Length: 340
Image (tube, rainbow, N blue to C red; front, side):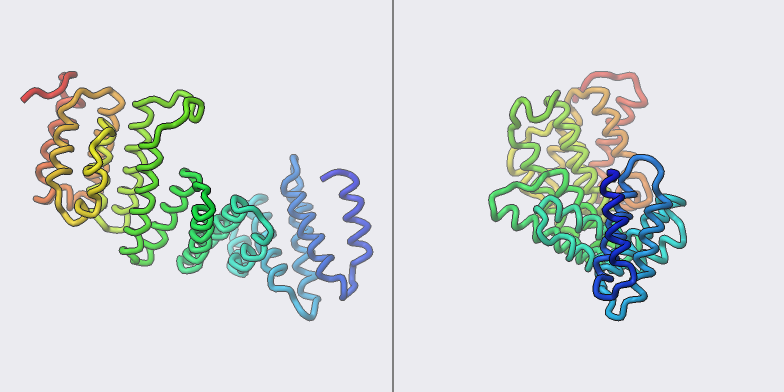
């Protein structure tokens, strides 16, 4: 905040102080100055906190309180407490519970560009996640989904990373509410975008040092993320499918279209193509990075969320192959591909 801004706020607040008709403008000025203090380099936490507190105090003196300004005050003061003391500060938690983050976001997005609107709704969703209010978190994601849909209708592709993070958070939220079909629908859509991201040729200057091995690593990693989410909420068979696909893509991501287009069949337990591709991948030459990655996936499959399914008869063939692979390359001394 510049010197002239401090002076202007001082004069403005002096003129509006105690005047009922200008109460809303006074509260807005206090909250805006509080936000400015928070963004200044240096330690202005005390000043930011004081202005937010003053705004809430003034709000209580007004006959017809503004619900948006009241919630914005709670939001800003809670942030001040968390920044000055601790993210777990009890006073901050109490203030957060009083804030209508949906109302704040709904008001703040007006007149903003799509990218900024997405940021505002994402922040609101995160706040509800902190409060463990899944239904309200879900409502924020619904607003984000509408924005993504509008972008696509207008011919603008959403940023892949941003959509993937959104989809993962949205799926977890749906999973906590036992909306399992909704989770699968969200993951399916994200998976489609993942295929597009890694199967579409990129301009040479789009991603420095982007090569075949880099593509395999990130493609495999993203599939593994979907598996982790599904495992967390108890959808073990669907999670197993993504872990298996992650293994395959890590070694060779240039597969025929039917392999990638058969997700629903895999979910239904039709694994003939999946197993054949899985077995073939583990017989190929591999790098040290790929060996480490596949070993890590085996560990994931042995954790509590997946161990029952991994040790079941359904996964027996896959378990045998991956166990052989890890025993050979990690625990043995063989450094060449398996020969039948």
